[in-house]
Amino acid sequence: MFDGISTQLLFGQVLIGLINGSFYAMLSLGLAIIFGLMSVVNFAHGAQYMLGAFIAWGLLNYLGVPYWGALFIAPVVVGAFGLVMERLILRPIQNLDHLYSLLATFAAVLIIEGLVRQEFGSTGLPYNSPLPGGVNLGFMFMPWYRLWVVVFSIVVCFGTYILIEHTKLGAYLRAANERPEIVESFGINVPRMISLTYAFGVGLAGLGGVLAAPIYQVSPSMGSNLMIVIFAVVVIGGMGSILGAILTGYLIGIVEGLTKVFYPEAANLVIFVIMIFALILRPNGLFSGKEGYK
Amino acid sequence: MPSDPQPILKVENLEAWYGESKALHGMNFDVREGELVTLIGRNGAGKTSTLRSIMGIVGNRTGSIQFRGKELIRKRTYQIAQEGIAYCPEERAIFASLSVAENMTLPPVLRPGGLSDKDLFEAFPNLHARRKSGGSKLSGGEQQMLAIARILRTGSRFILLDEPSEGLAPVIVKQIGTQILRLKEQGFTIVLVEQNLQFARLVADRHVVVENGQVVDTLTPEDLSADLDRVKTYLGV
Image 1 (spheres, each protein chain N blue to C red):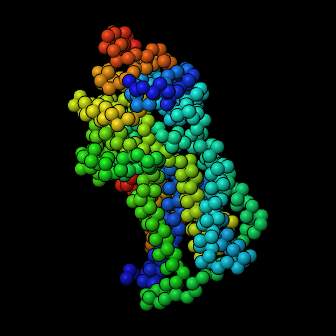
Image 2: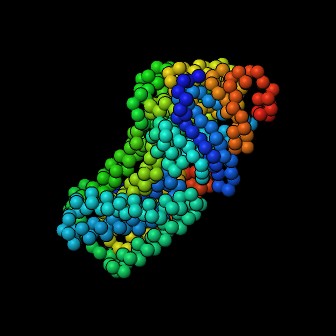
Image 3: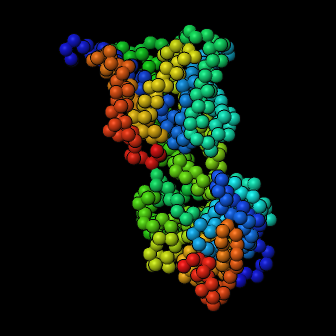
C-alpha cells in the first residue's frame, strides 16, 4: 500500500487505535457528562475506571463470577461508590470554587490508588480474555474480544448520546445544565439528579475498567496513565460536549495508531500537538456549539 | 375580591441574603385564594428577591413562609414546587439547548388539573407552529408565553410571575395581560411582580408596595387610580 508499510501493520495499528479510542471515548464521555451538569472536573475518573477492572478481577478470583457477570455488576458497584463519593465529598463543597472539587477528586485518586496498591501490589494482575481466538480477515488477524470491545463501546457511547439528546430524561439533564434552579422550581429533585448523573458517569468509567481488564494489565496505576490522554480528549472535544467527547475519543485513538505506523517516535506526542492546535484554533473545542449539551 | 378571608400564602418577617448582601429586611404580606396581588416598587427594592425567597432560590432566608398552612422556610426548591407553587422568572429562562416542545413539556405533572400538552398548544398556537425550533430562537413575547405556558402543566394553582411585560411591545403586553386575566378567571392565585403600572392596575386586586426589602404600603386598585402621584413616588418615576 504505502512504501515499506505493510497492510497488516497499518490495519493492526488502526485496530489498536480503535480499541484505545473506545476507552478514550467512554471515559471522556463520563467526564463530559459530569462536567456538564456539575462543573466538576472529576480527577477520580481514572481511579474509578481502575476500580471497575479490580472489581471484575475480584469477582472472578474470589467469587467465581465470570466476565459477563462482572460487566453488569462492576459498573453498578463503581456507580454506587460514586453515589457515596458525591454525597460525602462533592455535595458539601458544591457551592465553593470549582478548584475545590478538582482537588477533592484528586485526593480521592491518591487514596483509592494507595489502598489498592497496598492490597494488591503495583504489578499488574492478569485477566483472561472471555472471548479467546479471533478471525483471520486475510490482511490481519482480528481477536474476537477486541472486536467486542469496539462494538460494545460504540453502542454504549451512542446509546448514551441518544439518551441525553433525544429523551425526556436527557432534556432534564440539558436543562439542569443550563439553569438548575429553574428545573428545580418545576418540582424536579435536582440534587438527586446530580447524584445519579455523577453515579452514571462514574459507572461508565467502571464499565470501561471491566472492558479493559482482559486487554491491559489490571493494575493500580492503569487509570492514572490513561487520564492524561482523557483530559486532552475532553479539551479537544470541548469541555462538557457529549458528542465531542465520543468522536474525539475515537479520532484520537485512530490518529495515535496511525502515527505509530508512519512516525512512531511521535505517537505519544501527537495527541498533545492536536490539543495545542485545537486550543489555538477552536478554544471551545472542536465540537462546541454543535449540540445542546455543552 | 374573593370572599375567603383565610390567606393561602402568609409571609412573615422574611429576610433573605445573597452571600453577604441582604436583600429582604422583614417582608410581611399575605395572599388569599384566587387573588391577584402585585408587588410594585423601584428597581432593587426586593420584589424579585421576594419571589425567589418564596421558591427557595436565594443563598439564605429566615422568617416564615406559610403556604396552605405548611411552613416552607426550611424546604428545598423542588419540595416547594411540589406543594403547588409555580414560578416564572423575570428572565424567562427558556432553555436554549431544548426545542420549544421540550421546553413546554419539561415541567412534570405534579398534581391533577395541569394542562395537557394538547391544551397548552391549543392555547398557544404560535408555539405549536414553532415547536421544533430551538428555545432561544423565539421572540421575547413568544418566550414569555412559553415560560407561562409550561408552568401550567404542573397543575399548580398558585403562580409567581416576575415582570412578564418587561421589554415587550405594547401589543404583546396586552396579549399577556389577557392570558393572565384568563388564568385569574380560572381561579389561579397569582403574585405578580410588575413595574408597568398600566399593566398592573388592569389585572390586580391589590398592590403591595415594596421598598428596601420591606412592605411599606398596600393599595387597592382604587387607591392606585386616585393617588397616582403617591404611587409614582414609590416607583421613583
